[in-house]
Image 1 (cartoon, rainbow, N blue to C red):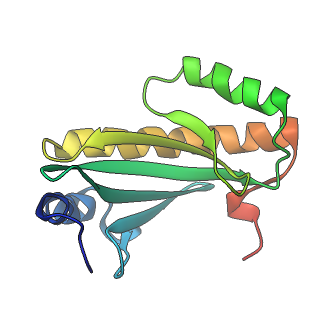
Image 2 (image 1 turned 60 degrees about the vertical axis):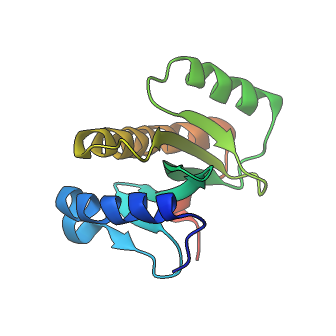
Length: 147
């Protein structure tokens, strides 16, 4: 695996044992990039480490919620209004039109408790909102999308 900076590598190496302690066998690491995946209910959560300048890195946790949901003004308004109520993270729509929820924390100072809170906040939010989005706006939950 290649890293963009030594700081990114150091944060990744610090996160590996934390992921194992927190999620055990539920967490799987990718071999080709600094990314982990964990399944929670209907949510598939990915956590990755990205370089942030030369001296730090960020840890982003994202769960894709729905696919095939028409991106309308009503959906956008719904997601923006939901963002106003979120303590951790925010909703978004990727370039393919798939909805997601994500949260990012600073890598160099991460603690086990902070990493756990970030991942569980994303997972629980995704598990709740994917059903709501599909019922109100259509599409399918990512967990139900054909491979």
